[in-house]
Length: 338
Image (cartoon, rainbow, N blue to C red; front, side, top):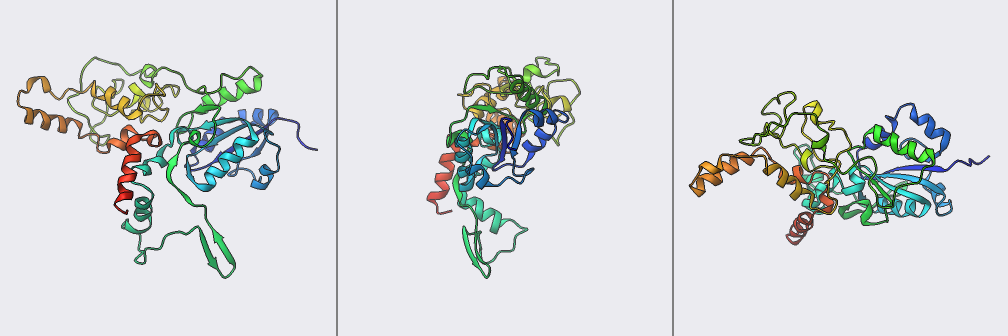
């Protein structure tokens, strides 16, 4: 007998799989999910086929959590299919929301990425420079792979998204709160709302003491052991908590790790990297007020910022698909024939 419960789906695009683990980490609440929903599509957990989704009426799925960025043509196809079949589509996690870690590849472009992975790294022996093809003929027939997009996209770049739930991954407690809200039958928030987070910063949630001092320079995590209880930025660590949307309860800083910004910028319309850099620069003082020589000042500034070895990977770690710099860099490499 067909289930009369509302249908729930979860799809895994270009991502690591951590979002599925986060859903499983709601623990016994998963029994309530089963009691109230027909959890009928999740490729890493269930054997439902694509053709089963295609056979559904449009809007037959009540709620879909779509995690992962759009890297391949198949990702786009599934995004469009699930958008058509879902009443509510949630961009679930940092990759779906803003491109996430996969979108860092946009800085160099697709050709450079493929060359690095299949030809240039020391562990690869590929003198014939053979790349994966979308179609290959073998004795058994034709093998196919989905084509890769020129650049990684966020979910909202291709389809209408009803809600966004950030995080790498979203915290299980926040997932549980969203699920329980839906189960309760309460009205859903306005379309376009952010779920599982709030407008305050991670810094506002962090219990570490702010002493009002400026760090003389930025340090990398292997260079120093942070003092317990004291603000990591004031100790010189590149913590993104001041510019990152809260909701995780400062999970990383409370474990002596700098915030990496996975919940995204507080202001959704601001440039995320510029916001992060501005917030960090405001608490670093390499002694510039005591230097009159411009060259000496620049040297001190360079030394102070050397703790950020990878600026793009630090300030745009989860948001490169939203970044104009990525487009320009990719086009530059394409113009050089890379």
